[in-house]
Image (cartoon, rainbow, N blue to C red):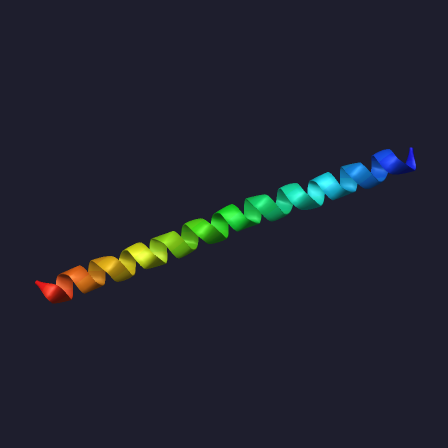
Length: 44
């Protein structure tokens, strides 16, 4: 019973970390894309 509880809690923590990382990665990607567009505009 204790092992199942520990595994369940660990699974929830890992899943929440992965979902948070996805949002962070997407935000960084959008920032890099915006920076690239700004550089393109200034080069024209």
